[in-house]
Length: 92
Image 1 (cartoon, rainbow, N blue to C red):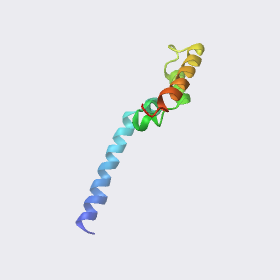
Image 2 (cartoon, rainbow, N blue to C red):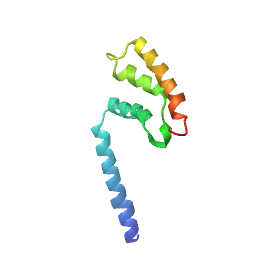
Image 3 (tube, rainbow, N blue to C red):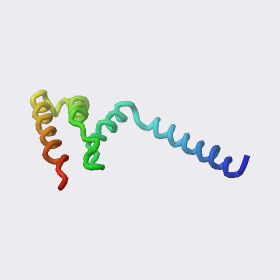
Image 4 (cartoon, one colour):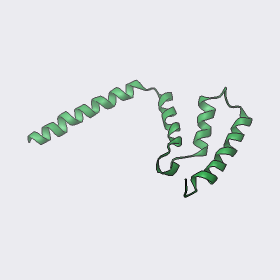
């Protein structure tokens, strides 16, 4: 075993595993779902990850008091128009 192997495989991997376990214990499942759904609003790569259905699930699951059925349908309508009008424009 070389010094490189020792530091890389044992120290580095042990540190990464420790940090990973620490992060996993910090967030519960509901928080992780919120993070995943919020990724649909990521502006990188010209809103490549923008998904109307994921945003609507986000509103239904995490904001039920703020959005009734009529507001959700209106939101779907507005988001689909936003996706067509803004995201697909080259100038955007």
